[in-house]
Length: 375
Image 1 (cartoon, one colour):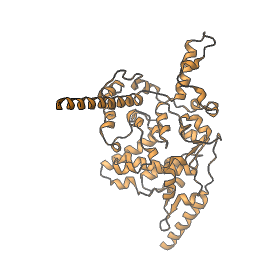
Image 2 (image 1 turned 90 degrees about the vertical axis):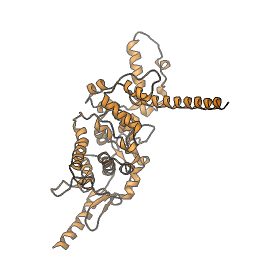
Image 3 (image 1 turned 180 degrees about the horizontal axis):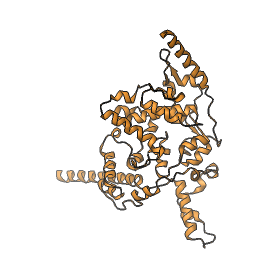
Image 4 (image 1 turned 60 degrees about the vertical axis):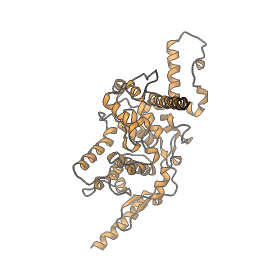
């Protein structure tokens, strides 16, 4: 009798494990197979139906599709600018390493990943995603990609890692915990250090036409993200804003390094399969973090050193993705954002008035006082 009960429990346990296995297999299939959003899938399906059955008149293609485009609002269908901003940097690379099929039969997780068709070294990192703590698994990049959008990220990462490996104190590379933003407003001087925050500042200083508060938010996110990339630990990972932490797709699918940089996880996942110029789109159409307290509240100026840092109040504000909004033009380039974030009705959002001159005057006044005391 006891053996029968034990056997019954064992069978129930096996059934439960099989169900969990199926869930994992479905997740791997979804993440390791090129996919498009329902919006893109619909357009592709309609195009194929029209291409392969042009002589059939009066055929309602809607009945062949599970996705009903009528569910998309008029504003969605009105503006679509993906093609104009698409970057054709590596079609050959993607087609050579990405399988177009997924396992069609139930397999163990260790069998499902090889069936996706990636090279062995990529499969090894994919398996680490399931075996290691989340903070130890970094994004899976196409390291051979050498475009400017890629090297802006990977060149500093590689330099920083080499410096630390050669004996440079990690603190000299990561810089202070409070994010210094002086180099956002001036050119680099010989005495300036090379830290994570100075890299982030120079990245955004090179961009024109982007809202200054969006730049500050980007610097904050880049700083926290790069700290973890260079020195992965539970602590550095916890300090990354939740929206900037790598998604499962970033960890499992080899992708262009630029796809790691945008703040929004849905946007990063979308760029992995359909890379578009998010910088140009932001410059053209605008985004906003809806900060209305002014630059003086977003930036702290140290009265003793004149160093400018991002305030805790501003950091807390941008930590919450609900405070971000996007123009209708930006959402037309990235339909992935629709129905997930606030999309404003205007095609273009102008930069928020910031009074940068007043902030710099405050800094310069402190610097003059420091020089006067030193005389």
